[in-house]
Image (tube, rainbow, N blue to C red; front, top):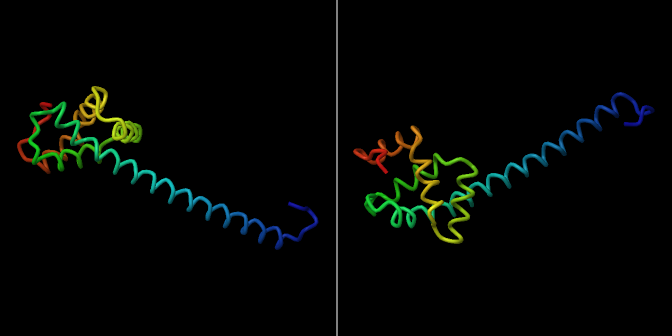
Length: 122
């Protein structure tokens, strides 16, 4: 900032810059949230198909709770992989991603709460 400006003017300018920066960050947060929601929605479309192909022991009636628990416990990169698989269709790597998510204690707890009697034997 210009050293010839008064302290009050520099302070106001700094506050204005901070306000603009925070507004920009708020916009970025909205973009990230929208991208996350889109990725989750796309990933949810491939999981039932992958369950049918690679996990035939999961009854069709349980696809929704399995899908919800899988998506809720997937990492960001896993969600991105599943969303990409939604475009090209499930493959053995999709099944491996699902197995990795299913192996987590949080996923097992989710499934136990959603589907009593479901175990990690997938």
